[in-house]
Amino acid sequence: MKNYFSIKDIDSLDNWVKEAIELKKNPLRDVSLGTNKTIGMLFFNPSLRTRLSTQKAALNLGMNVMVMNFTGEGWSLEYGDGTVMDQGTSEHVKEAAQVVSQYCDVLAIRAFAKLEDREEDYEEKVLKSFIEYASIPIVNMESSVGHPLQALTDAITITEHKKTNKPKVVLSWAPHPKALPQAVANSFVEMMQRMDADFVITHPVGFELASQITNEVPIDYNQQNAFKDADFVYVKNWSAYHDYGKTSKDSSWMITQEKMKLTNNAKFMHCLPVRRNVVVEDTVLDSENSIVIEQANNRTFAAQLVLKKILKNI
Ligand code: CP
Image (cartoon, rainbow, N blue to C red; front, side, top):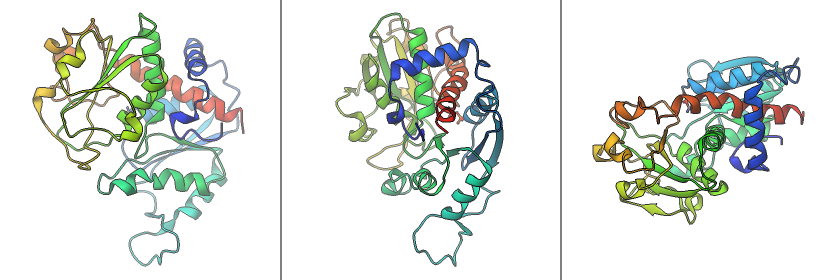
């Protein structure tokens, strides 16, 4: 594997999940693999988990790590071909990507959707430009369209906690005061189509994700109905795909203890960060059924597996 751009880069999901669970038992088993190799991590947006877990993963593999918060610190990048650069952009991605390739052996990038122009966001201009012009492998740390490190983490976490071969998994939209990208939901939906799960999505009318991502996955517009007998409730806000970037604070969709009682004693999952008592009630997040911290811990082993596979291929 050269790049980890989307979950399509996972050749055998079962093997990857098994290998990540093995890595977790002995995280330093491959500590020599990354000796004298450097990962560069470019952030165009904030992060807690992705930044620290990917850094931890690289350290577990013996790599050197360089982190740059690009927004506010890096030059403003130009992506257009043939642009007369006499406006706000200072450096073209063609040079930036090649220059970073001189200093690093692997490059990980976070660049969220701007939620202004759907076509532009779904072109994945930032990640795809770096893939085109860099000479080193690229890892997606959340792009406009997907968050494949999170989705791999979620597959690992569900596998560790499932009690049946085919658990019922519900992806539920929840309210949020700010418009958020669809990336986490998109990658989770793609992942659930690859796992053996009885999977259903629930959200208000108007919050349908892209049909090229949801395919035949059932959508239930009645959240309480969707929760019935669920083994896992995965919660995430996303803004509208069709009425692009529209959000809603409809508190009737907040996850409550009452709603969780409808489930089969379901585990509560969220990628974090989460807004307490807006997205989910304290009582749910603080309950024994909440596995959000374990989920965050598994980010390290998902990232470590991806970096290990890339390092073996360099
Ligand atoms: N889940 C996740 O990607 O968290 P951060 O935004 O803090 O990295």
